[in-house]
Length: 212
Image 1 (cartoon, rainbow, N blue to C red):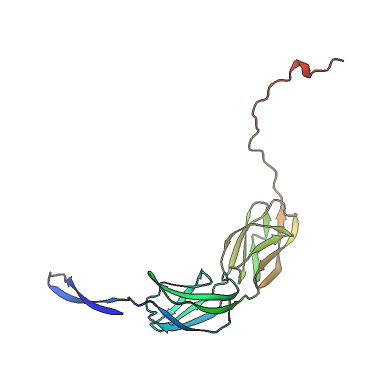
Image 2 (image 1 turned 120 degrees about the vertical axis):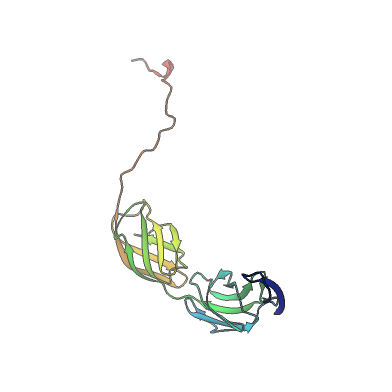
């Protein structure tokens, strides 16, 4: 850290000195705790020159910083973080720390509800619960539904028009396991024609007719 003085003007145009602090030292990590750490658990990173950290990544995934001092940073481990041994890196603007490894463990997903409870083909379905951010697949009635948005507490999917009708189980898969305790009623929709190609057709040639 370096300090220097610069000039600043007050409202009545008088010159006054101003202390400016420049953080020139790269942050340095000495330890992380706990190790191993679970998804959604708090990880404490200890080191030096950590004031003003702009990002913390674990396995390349940006984490939520909940506390930041010169010697310690606390983050909540995202449930989108890859499992296994992963590098922890602290960033401050254009500088990065050394890398220290932590072992990340997944926790089982939890599903509490799905809305709407009666859903049509091609409609969006929102699934709420916990530890859903790392979802790798969602099926309804055994048919995959594309994930369009994922957070720790909710998933949004588009119900496939191949999904069976009636009451169907919603199954969410993550690295931590499978949650399948929520059901929805699936309704079909009428097929729609948006166009015909070609729009015109040539009349048959005389040679196509068979005399009788």
